[in-house]
Length: 66
Image 1 (tube, one colour):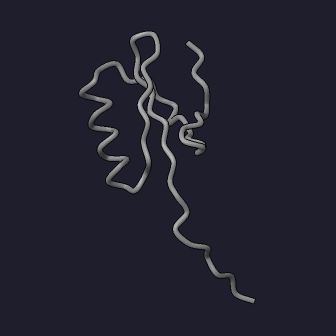
Image 2 (cartoon, helix red, strand yellow):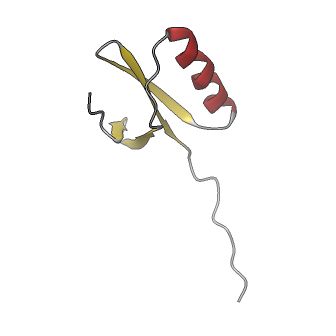
């Protein structure tokens, strides 16, 4: 299995977290944690394994000192 490192969904780019999950329970717990941390999450099933793709929206631009 050679998963894609990124995924386009609804015009947004999400990045794979680099892990393969084997059970629905495991992926559900990780999904919930990511969502609680402010990430958009998509779960993809490939060859009986689950992959999590996440994206965090930028909430503001940091100001720099001059």
